[in-house]
Image (cartoon, rainbow, N blue to C red; front, side, top):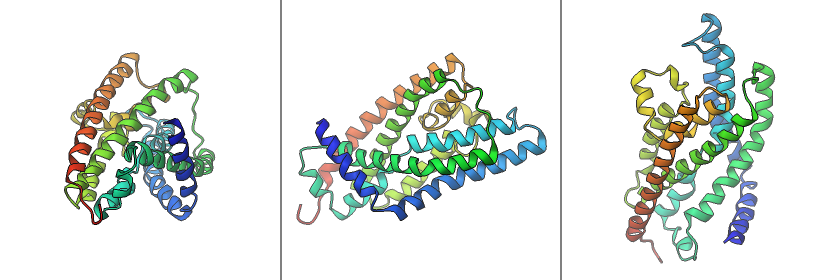
Length: 265
């Protein structure tokens, strides 16, 4: 099985290099929102001294860390798989003795992720010199403690994204559903604004949803802004949603394949 993943990685890595223009568009898409949020909130913080107890440097370190964490935990499964279900080209992958999502689609996500991170590095360095963030609160233990959170965030995000994409077995409107899901993720993951600045009710709801593990929780762990109790609770919620996402994905995939049909299949 390891050789299968290795070969799929080589194929998908080579494929990603063939779509450099597409890479640039995706990178710009991911960069625009955090950079705009960074500029807006630092401007407000400078004029008022702080916002909700967060200083200019707090916003700078938060959004610059967000740029990295977002790349590590995000997934693009719907853009890789939905059209294959809808136009029937998934048939060719179904006859292979491997799971098309947990192998080829997963490796495609990872290859795309590595390439975008490589492209992000020089942009992040430029932002560093522009905003001069103070990362003195970040320690090696914080980084190590955040790694499982990042892995957990990506795994949940990937499985939920795959389950959502598999709705295409029943409807052609899956991208509309994806936009609704994305809007919820933006609100409850801390992408738009750090969750501690959101209304109390939103913070409480976010504490029971998986989205905070996508961005907010790893960022706060890295920056050393969560207590041991808060980290433990976040991991327990994350593990719960991991189990839910596994069960949901397995069920919707199994039922969806039964309904799949394509010309020549």
